Length: 495
Image (cartoon, rainbow, N blue to C red):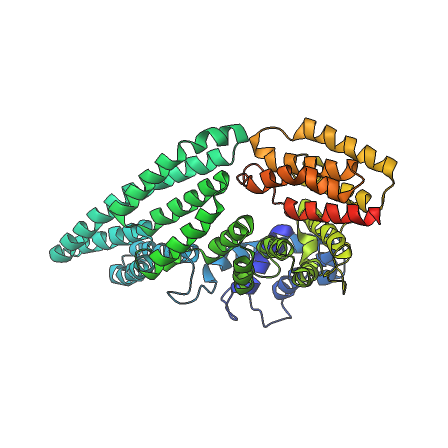
């Protein structure tokens, strides 16, 4: 049933109003009734559908035949989706259109309709040239060459042969680039130890891809190098360079050195906002996030992922009113229930931090606070060097704001044990330094003494860059801000 529902959602969104397979206007037909039933999330089982259609939950032979025929029509209907005119599609949609047209052309050739097939091949060439699809261009040219051979058009045949020779050279370079890309991405998605070792050789891979691009001028090669370069910079923690890399790619598109179809606006916007967050360019990040959030459909997981960085930008810049509005928009979105549970738990963690921050801030946003979306966090506590650390810090800060002296000593022991067990290696330097500061706040009765003794640690924390993306989660609140808050809580305890 879920398979059919996913197909129906695609067709319902991207189909023409009329189609040759399913009559959307004739509600008397069972297929039409079944289609509209499956657009509703409330229908989850075959029995429920059978009862709606036949008034009986029994899965009869008639129902099974209907479902089988309906499934075949849905798959066939994928050939009739509304892709829009040339220039409005993304590169993957354009590739699908070319494949569909090539099937039409090959069918015409089977029935000896060479002149008709030639027109279809011309359509493929137009799209392939517009979108930089060299593989599709080769297939269209090969089909055209075959027709010119059969029609004994020597001049046209010779021209096609020369064009194809150039395309074949580009094809070799593109396939070499894609092989490098695939191998690298697979390695980077492997164990951290393997990833760390491979990062040392990644610059030479990027140089090789750069050389292939300069020789071929292929937008596909530029795209793969661009993605790998960003991955390398992310793993290395070079977030300022990521922002510059995306700006360079935009210039390449504007100067027509790279086709716009190979510049993924959603990917680049998401990456740029994340990099601006990590490089602490909050004002610029908020501006770009506000401009580009409309690129993402509000029901999609990508929208929620983009909103996470948007919310964190507002929290990091201490624009609590903005953060509150964004948190409410995300947590009140009905589609949040469809996210994986660890994603829902992250939103609950952001909400908990936000509530704590505004409740202890003089300029906090106290109106229309976001409501709880997860009563219990089950997955995040298992991420010992990631989100569990954020939970521990929040718990300790809450105890510092309200706990008794004896209880604070117990919290200090928790921090010592956690640091010894989980925060090892140079990549854990920032959380290690912050927990040492937090220990001072727990052990000192005087905020001035804690501030004075923690000054060198704070300076060291401020000088320690964020580790690469492979080794840490985003700080929900910068540790420097949390240290200021801890001192404020300590001062209030004195009062």
